[in-house]
Amino acid sequence: SDTGQSYQARKVLLTTGAFTNMLLAQPLPLRPKARTIVLAELPPAESERLAEMPTLIYENGSEPTLSHVYLLPPIEYPDGKTYLKLGGENNPVEIIDTFEAQRDWFRSGGSAKDAAELQEMLRRLVPNLRVISFQMKPCVITETPHGYPFIKAIEPGQVYAAVGGCGASAKSSNEIGRLAARLAADEAWPDDLAESYFNTTGK
Image (cartoon, rainbow, N blue to C red; front, side):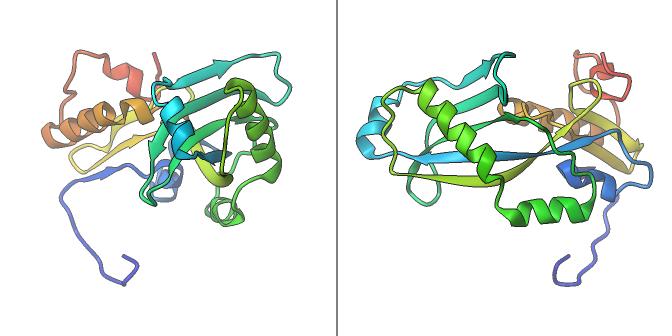
């Protein structure tokens, strides 16, 4: 741990995202991508106006830089402020598959260029938007070859993993966690969904 303590366990479930391969003797085929997200702080009246806004996924292959965007409705964060969160696939994509690259990316604060493009897109998606301030933050998503998370035994009976959300798994994270926890606890696939969706063979 960060205090120098060591812990032992009979079983371990790794949910370590882009850092997973730094913990495994045999790496998984993961592609960690650098992303920048934008938080738009809303005044109370704007939060109320947009209160019924659904989660939005916008895809347009003709967009020169942002072909895929997601937008979350107003959410109150721990600081007591309400934000819209916007993220997307800015081009070109930067692959960061070493600890040093990921550390430097998180310390960088994100890409100002990508944040500016996201802000412009947000104003296109939400006309007449009133914003107090914008924040940009660095993010990393982890893609898999088959487009689904890995939920699998790395060393059966000992080490399990639930990783590779592909930038689209927040909405299903509870169920992904349940499947992984049951797999680790029971040492058997726990669901009617085909196990092959969640391993290296893909669909």
